[in-house]
Image (tube, rainbow, N blue to C red; front, side, top):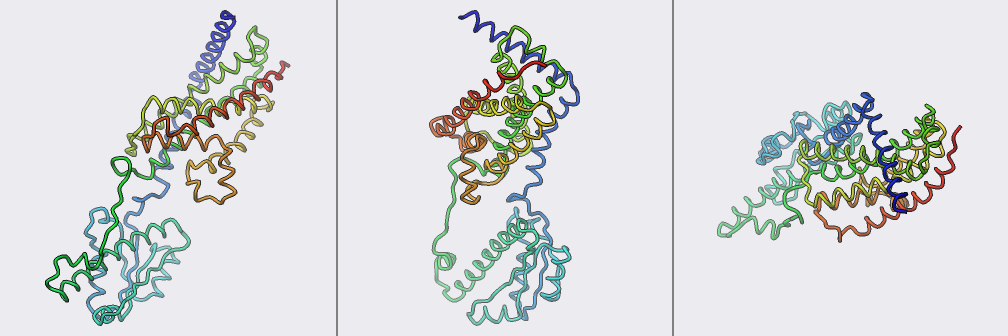
Length: 395
């Protein structure tokens, strides 16, 4: 019994090494292997908008105020005190609200603020004044970022003006800002530092890279050998079907782990991602991710007779996983029906576990559900895949 197990392990290892050598000799595939995670990192890191995406955004300003306070507002917007906002907005001065709307429609500016003619008069007489913010609804993401930035800026200016007025009306008050804002909200995180938006994306990209390597690589490898005729020789060799599955899974798993490691290194070097969890636990989660998708790749490779068919089926299976797993967008923002669908997708649990480890520094006890679910997915799919692959025959 021991000799049979030893022989099966040796056969699996040799078959896996064979696949890795064939892969390494194909320069085009090797270049693609390196370029793909780099492309994903650059695309998601620099293209997807985040909290620092608004730089030198063109903003139209319409100042109709007859007094001096409107000019003070414009001056504060043009020269914000915070260094973070120093390059936030690029002002364009316009003569009317209609002109501002036209500039937005022509995509010359991303938004505009309009200060009415009675702005100073209302404030000086103790009335509440209104500043109108016009947004570009054709670009909701940039519009939201600009609206949030303007709201923060206007709120700070409003608070400063109110504080100065209180100090004028009540000279003896100890802290005028405490009268205007009786309390402030202090936000603290559970981990040190200030995580950026890409730290939310990086675990999802790592899981996706492994999924694609395990599924596309495995299905492509088997279907390609079937088309070339080399699969017949492997199936006719005195090795078990299980050894073939394990060997090919080993080769694709190594490729997936290498790509995930490259992705993590790029995330750390390019975007300052910090791994707050244990690296040993991170490696375990990556291996579990490979295991949870190997079975799917084997099933598709056994069903599809041609490489093109295998790739078509694979992409059909993968695309819903990519967008419903929470890799790019929070699951909580999805409709209820899609949230339920996301719960039956193995990638969801891989992304969640990696995010807990990398971003929150959670230990194994805090992700037992994700670990057990990934194990369950892997066992179930492998239990189905092994007999399905066993029916593959030589020509």
